[in-house]
Length: 286
Length: 156
Image 1 (cartoon, each protein chain N blue to C red):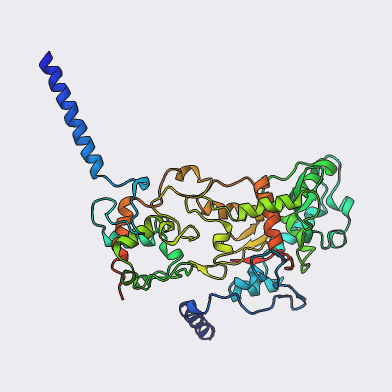
Image 2: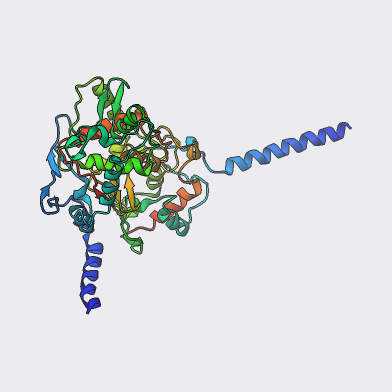
């Protein structure tokens, strides 16, 4: 009985797998509504000066199974990291005897929509700060705790939790602050710079060939509104700088350090490219 | 004594001659490949390519990895062919071997600087090449010849 009901589905999936090569080139026409309640903006008009007319969430480029997984927060494996992040938020750490909550209270209020507007200009540091850098700054100065090492499990969980407080909020950064514009320019240069033995730029795949398949991977526009994102391939949360580094490594180039000036500039520019898309953190991708 | 010296010199000269001829018969270096009207006429190794070996190098993800971007019906046993590049079915009907060689060696010499196709036997590459790939080409000269021979079999 069970086999009988599964077989036609399996055969159907196979037929799609083999027959879909001419149909699969486009992002889907579908709506992302989390838990049937909260609709995400997955398509929106591109900001002025953008090479595309419309910016698209990577969600539109994923398989029906992956899309369904993100749409249901009980199925989304990354919601465990959001829960873990909430624990960290409320846990005292460091010599000052404080947790995040000691100063910021309930994150649902204090962090609401905050993550959607990062990176932000940090005048004291003289560079843009993303959530990771902001958290580390806060840990060092206010909690007297050790800053997180890049991609520490707690860093990923806490950033995921903070970004999740902006679920659905359109992503948008303020380029008028400090020197954000020059960092944007620098990020743009990097976006179009070909690196490595394979001689590929971000734009080679995510601009010139968005929507096409590279082997089994459907190339998206490379928007960052879902980060940190749950990557099925790695069965783990993947931070934005981890993904930047992975992409650059795949061109057979030296990887810049996480949070280096290069990657912060790239984060500013790429975040701008996705202006108006809802924060989907934690998104699910292939 | 004098004879010994003389013999030694002759020996050295002979060795040099052998050395030079061995070098001349070796593969053309990536900086010495001659492009003429978007073709590379001569085999890079002076030897014909092996289409069977080329088929393997074509599919190998660490070598040609050609399926990442190109569909190739002759290789239908492999799932998920890319669509970034043009399909390679019948590619030998559209391009001569010397054109295919030029495209594989450095497609930018044929399609212009904007093509995303990597050059497989060139040192004109991107910035910040990883240490273990510096000064190296993606394929060896023989692998280029093998892949060109394999592409030559893709006729419709």
